[in-house]
Image (cartoon, rainbow, N blue to C red; front, side, top):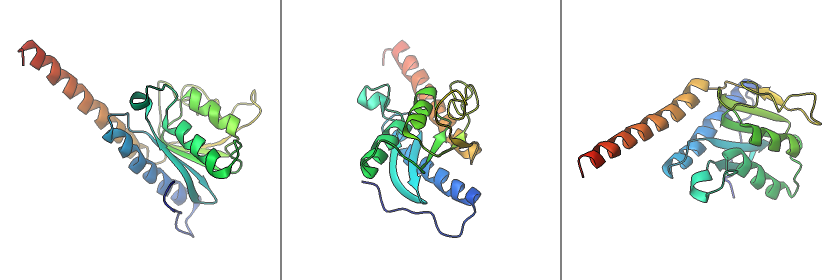
Length: 176
């Protein structure tokens, strides 16, 4: 169960988005703590947190265990419905095609993300699955909220991972 967290009243929509994206970064830190790519997602209804998730694909040996999928599943349990009508999904990284498709099927109203994903982004960067007329549901998109901070969190993770990999190779060469 998630903590009883709500966005402070009286904030503009942009301020609310910033509040929740900052929160996704805290959730993303949980992924990093277990060696996963630091991506965090939260589902919000009426400015109240109802579910959160962080990447767990490696930990669970599950290619579908992305932050968004975990958050969507938990939100469905909380609402006792697979349709997540009038919810907003906040995520620190632009959703991939799998996650974007799940949001469409869940009827999420809006997706807000931090960093753009120029390799697999499906909310406007590479594809736009969440807002296409070919599908039976379209989401409103707000991208690039606190994008620098979100991108930095992910970049630092990969810099550390590459450095650790390089060190391990050097140690293997030396027979350590």
